[in-house]
Structure formats: C-alpha cells, structure tokens
Image 1: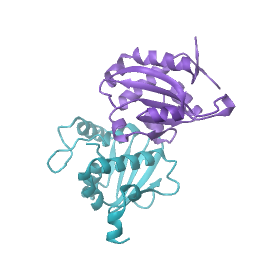
Image 2: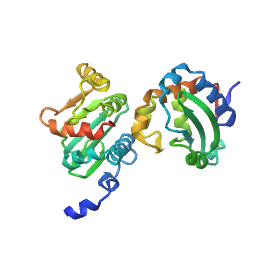
Image 3: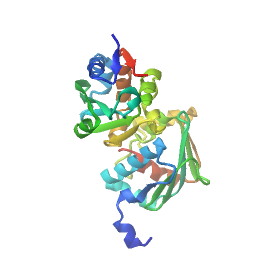
Image 4: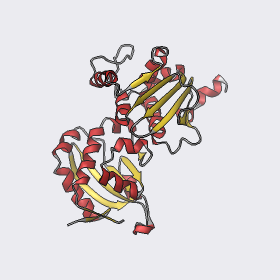
Length: 152
Length: 141
C-alpha cells in the first residue's frame, strides 16, 4: 500500500477483524475501543502509526483469546493466538477492562502512578492476576499499546 | 407474582427493582449518557416474533422510565443497545454471569453506543443485572 493511499484511509478501514474473529466478543470490543479512541482522541493516532508488533490477549475466565497484529497504521485482529506474540497479556475479563482504564499523565502520556486504575493494575500484577509476558523486551510496544487502549 | 420475560409487566417490575437497588443509585450516579436498550432477539419458538427490547431511561442513578417496545423503536430512542438471544439473557439473569465476560464471549453485542463510555460504568451494569435478579421472573422456556 502506498503512503498516499494510506493517508486517505479512514480508521474504520485500518482496523480489520480477520476471518473467524467476527464472533470473538473480545475482538469486537477491542476493535471498537481502539477505533473510538482514535476518533475521539487525535493524540493517540501517532502511537497507532508507530505501533508494530504482535500482542496476544487472553481472557482466562472467559476462555477467549485474540492476537493484535500492528503494522504501522494498520491493525488486524485474529481469533486465538496466531504466530509468535511479542507480548502476551493474560488476565480475567474484568481486569482486561481495567487495563483500558489506566490514567495517563498529561505530559508524555505515561501511565499515571497516582491513578487509581494503575495502582489496581500494579496490585493485581503483583498477585499474578494480571500477567504480561515480553514487556521488558518490548516496552515501547507495551507503552504505546497502553496509551492507545486507555480511554483517557 | 412472577412476570413473563420479556414483557411489559416484567419491564415495570424491573424499573421498580432498579430504583430499589441502593448500589445502583451509587454506581450509576454519574451516568448521564442516555437510555439503554436491552434487546432480546426474535425467537418464534417462544412467541417472540420480532426483536423486542426493554428500554431503560436511566439517569444519575435513577431509572426514570422503562418501556417494553420493539427493538427498532428502542434502537432509535436509546444511546446504547445491547443485544443477544433469549437463552443468553436467561443465562445472564439466572446464573449471574458477569456482563463484561458475556460480552467478551460474544454472548451479547453492543450494537449501538460508545464503548469507552460503557467501560467506565462496569459496576453500574453489574448493578442493573443484580436488579434484574430480584424480579420474580417466569421464563418462556
């Protein structure tokens, strides 16, 4: 796809559910969340443009999983774990929602350590309720994904 | 007396149950984002010939009105619409499923409305469900 063509694409057409992912409720939710965040908050578009990598998310209590494949301004969401993820997030469904509530600082848009949602995420991570694999090796990916998914 | 789900009498009883739930009054006190339609998909085998809905006019921790109506009417009047088949609504109410988990499993779909707004009100949606569980309900199967 050429750069000029990319510039004319709406965000609806840059976020795609792969065949088989249409019935995955988590995939539908995340595609809607990311799309609405991009439409509501233009500052998130730079992160979306720079995101490259493969992130698996597993909602353990719901027995649902998906893979987000970011290719710079394009996102394809697959049902299940597809390929070798750079980062894998495993948590219960409610805690996955909690990740999207993480507050961001106004400067640099970093996760706000004073925010109640981030403190809860940290506590749950300490107790193994939220597990993120590959974050240390891929921290820019994790940071950008956090900013993109946060509703703040 | 048990009320048939869904129906106009069940909807009226549900409004009373929501307003009698102090936890909903707290969890929903900041909700000013419009009415919510709970859409039950058509199922002729249980005498639901078309998609029907319970339309809740919820505002600031109160259910100001509740209407049993066609889904098309409810979708046009609601800011949010959650839809699913009859058996999934029954399971949600009877087995106390977590509504977020049910959405992730694809048992229900948010067909209208702003997801980031809904996500801020997870506890509110749980309390709406808890209210439904207090209604004496007769299911169609």
